[in-house]
Length: 231
Image (cartoon, rainbow, N blue to C red; front, side, top):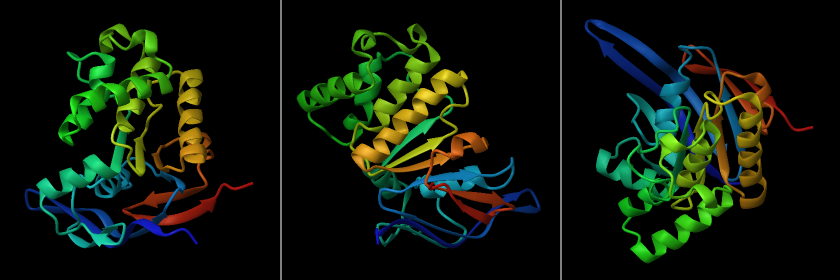
């Protein structure tokens, strides 16, 4: 059996808004194993974004524990979380989140700078990743000179910069037309099958979720249903 890579145990996340407490997560349990492809679904307000922030080490729980490779990260300081994020997790967002003043290859190399990768190595890896997403002829272009699909491919290459074990894709096709979105999903599927990456796909679209091996449905801050998509 594959070992557990990310595990949330009885996780609560409570936000205080004035005198009101909002329970975004209510005792959430989730176990994601090495090289799994998992989709997380749920309506608006179900706790999807909060769960993603905890899985991605962007936040810590109010109560409960979060494990990454069996290390409890729920008590770590932000500086320690940032280091783990940089090494272990690659993020792909709906809004692309590219730096507008940087070229495609400079955007891809950016995470390597934060990890202290030598310049020569950054350039070599950056070119390899740009080639992987088939944008060699656009690598000196800035985001404003690229189509939405091309920007998302740059974002995927950037997510792979530090060779993370986990790719966290939050509505990665939300701003793309259906054909381009399908291409992005195919690419994620290839990463999972060929590179054995652990993929966590957050989506509101049931058709997209079918690419994953299993789907976890969230409602009111906890998982209410799990379905296997294996045929």
